[in-house]
Length: 468
Ligand SMILES: Cc1cc2nc3c(=O)[nH]c(=O)nc-3n(C[C@H](O)[C@H](O)[C@H](O)COP(=O)(O)OP(=O)(O)OC[C@H]3O[C@@H](n4cnc5c(N)ncnc54)[C@H](O)[C@@H]3O)c2cc1C
Ligand SMILES: NC(=O)c1ccc[n+]([C@@H]2O[C@H](COP(=O)([O-])OP(=O)(O)OC[C@H]3O[C@@H](n4cnc5c(N)ncnc54)[C@H](OP(=O)(O)O)[C@@H]3O)[C@@H](O)[C@H]2O)c1
Image (cartoon, rainbow, N blue to C red):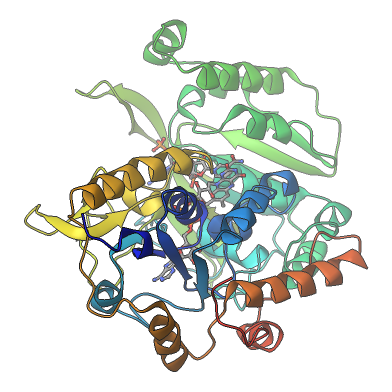
């Protein structure tokens, strides 16, 4: 073990839930932490993913702010690994680097017409309505009468719900101003959620599916014929292997199928066993519909029930297609990457090189370690598993040996490198600005979306060094 273990400093790249949990766990063990994010703002998908009408979930950021207030913590926002700094430069300055940069991109359907005007990734749509600066300039035409959301996960539900909330419901949230305007003018009245497998295989969680049945201005509609389960699904649901979540989902869907619609102005329709084959365009290159395959389920060798086309097809007319079929990690800088799985190559959180050898002092956690699934809390245990490995390596004297570990020099190096560097105090200035703007309008905050405005309000708001 080295003598200076109390001054060992770790860089964590990505200030989402995984990065914050790792930071807290390491600070508690006497390590110092510099938490980096490409954005000026912290909190990852809690700020830029969680639906604006779910403010309680976002209160988890209070715990992260407590972490940030701890001795030994610094935040460096506006610093993108791979753009402003390299992996090697971090290794020259830190005893360890933890990659927690999440899964920034989307999966593609790989079908004709996917890039037509009116066909988008939910990833972009979510970033847009949540004021992520990289997506703020995107435009979504919400003027059609019907939207189709492809996928049966919670993100698909979030996106469908956002499309049918009342203008007052959206207006009272921290939805980006540009999106509040667009939702207010939207003429989408019907949202069809398309699952490629059956109701028993849907990835929704129960509270999210329940919420669809409690919407102010939308009926939830399920065709009872879509709920006739195949024998394999029926047997699985009745078995001890079945997840309670799936059983409850099917119960809830049966309840929806038996409901008399209230005659609301809007509808959310859940369809199952249907996969898109082609996004259809009109003569102007805009989405006019979706050609879809009707599927059946087939048991695979590993026991999984897979969707296979029956050969029957149908068309749905629509003006908007949002694919919500999961997020995907992308390679960053020279961090070893498993392109097939879209993850940082790792063994339980220890980063491995392409030959499968451990790289001293390099770790990973969160979505980029295990893949884009799991709720906020899942990342706490995941980070604990990773930080346990880091601490074990520290005890064994197997951390990285930096050549330039002076913390003050790190900050001045960053100030030279980055056009606008944001410390925690700078973020607090943005936070105060946003919440003050929200207060007068009865909203939790009015988010800044423009990097230049963020820099005016935030970067250099404090002339003091980043250390608290
Ligand atoms: C749309 C959506 C809604 C969700 N809603 C809920 C919910 O209601 N409740 C719930 O419990 N869970 C929800 N989740 C899941 C939850 O958000 C994730 O489990 C969690 O955010 C994953 O944490 P993470 O830290 O791994 O990644 P992220 O939260 O994505 O954080 C990664 C961070 O890394 C930064 N970064 C990326 N690249 C770089 C780079 N090159 N250099 C520096 N920084 C970089 C990003 O800016 C980001 O801040 C939702 C997920 C999505 C997609
Ligand atoms: N309120 C909340 O708590 C909340 C909100 C949002 C997100 N989250 C969490 O964030 C994580 C990510 O959510 P997510 O919705 O992005 O992912 P997800 O839960 O993995 O769901 C992805 C969906 O896409 C489908 N799919 C994948 N490839 C497809 C294809 N080629 N064609 C058609 N359908 C396809 C999947 O079907 P198959 O099952 O057939 O593969 C699945 O239904 C989840 O863990 C989720 O619970 C939580």
